[in-house]
Image 1: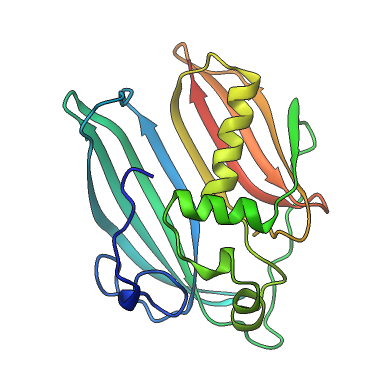
Image 2: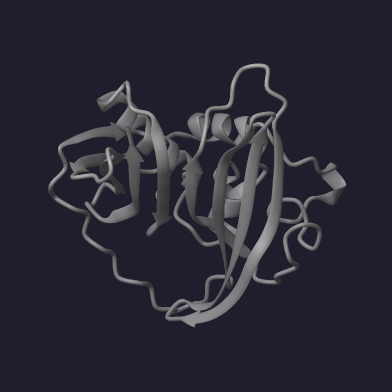
Length: 234
């Protein structure tokens, strides 16, 4: 939210994102999603701080899987205040081929069944639009139903990966309102869509060195794992 990308409308690609070839490499694969992130919170940003973010492309890797050709781009961010580095993040983006008739689909993974606390979420287009607006995200898969179903071949509007991750952190904060987050990482496993409700769940593990650790995950309406995450906190 603090560092929204600035792109003129004429500089957007067909999917609503800024056209590739500026900061992000010009990968030709048409479909892209947020695959995961790893964040460390070194100190708190304070109201009134002048914050700066330094970003760089850390790696670009091409792979071939059962669903076709994939490309993974890892971006590193460093957010600093006048007191020094506050947050570091590694952000993974996955690029995929257009849907092919008869292409194999990865089998779903069952979600853990040992949740100690959970919350049900019913997504709708208004929720997805508001999150897109907050993060200045023009990606059409989150608000353009005809585009996401007819062009990219998905059954409904896709719930943002970072929104699911935000809801997982929110679940922890509801459970442990005094927690100070030190590290948080998440990996998207299976997309969630606005046509069905989903659940966010968590369970505490033993920590080390004075830190607590919480496993977090999201599952779809059929009980399939959609996102796995972990948080370390004090």
